[in-house]
Length: 283
Ligand SMILES: Nc1ncnc2c1ncn2[C@@H]1O[C@H](COP(=O)(O)OP(=O)(O)O)[C@@H](O)[C@H]1O
Ligand SMILES: Cc1ncc(COP(=O)(O)OP(=O)(O)O)c(N)n1
Image (cartoon, rainbow, N blue to C red):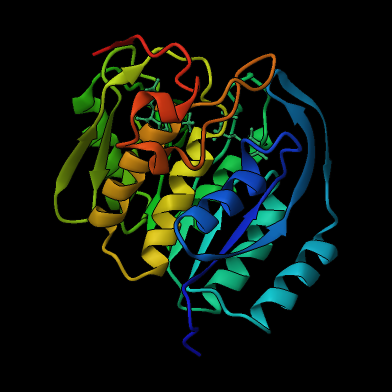
């Protein structure tokens, strides 16, 4: 059934400080004017300094949550973030296979704090069961390196990686994000036909907690509206750049981005307040 507004489901873990995970996804869906829904896989005790502990929800309970959503409000898009175990991945693969809904995978493996969010032995299940179902996969450079067992040191390497995720692992499209490059953050999309680059200036800020979650949530929201992969990634790049530029002075570590940063573009400096932390940027 077509809904009155676009709808998106995020299947992921939590962040009680609100910068990453389910919380970031729901804020982002709202900002993109998409009705957001969520199924929680793991409850994570974390903040801007790191992860303290993790509780994985039992598989039958994750399954109940999925059934509740899918039997009532079938989403226009599904996005997954933190899926820690092979068992969770197998369950989610079954649900996705039963519906023909665009599926966005953010292959979350390790948080910026260095804490592991996916079991080491779940990587093969991710590749075998989920990636081939994806409309788009959105790895950062370390994640793409793990998926392909290769090293990425240049934009050309990112291009090869994005292409390989499609041609060898079976996704329809892949965007390798460039936040981990030391210079210009260039994201490389392979949409199954051609390569596209999306770049911005690099902001010298430590407040980038949840950038990957937010970026992939924008892509999901835009796909839910019917935009193409290329348009969706382009909008995501602009959205995350604004969210980083206007990042908030919150937390004792790597703080969250500003999910309404895109609304501040164009406002004169005095109306923005002091939200442009460490705005000295290098190109
Ligand atoms: N300091 C920065 N300045 C501008 N853009 C950035 C910065 N860090 C990351 N980005 C952008 O944010 C998005 C997420 O990047 P990345 O850090 O690679 O992913 P993740 O958060 O999954 O590690 C990408 O579009 C990337 O280019
Ligand atoms: C519950 C949860 N999911 C994902 C992440 C990782 O988020 P990401 O967007 O990659 O940002 P960093 O945490 O790496 O800054 C997370 N921390 N928690």
